[in-house]
Length: 96
Image (cartoon, rainbow, N blue to C red; front, side, top):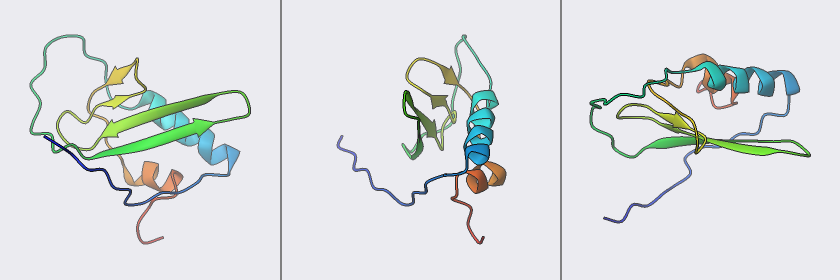
């Protein structure tokens, strides 16, 4: 099965305060679960976040359906929701 990816929206966060609050929100979102889980249907839609400074870079993917996982490639959390507050911090809130 071949999937295509398309960028629907993007934004840069230049405020150090907003970037720190966004990173903190994502650091504490969702729950850890090491046991078996049963997830609803996943349509493959996701949001990607990239954080970088002069010395470091990290990326995070949030699945928008199914178990709504968030992962940086090594750590996974379940039930992460992109709330209006998170979207506003990321500069992606609709209707601003």
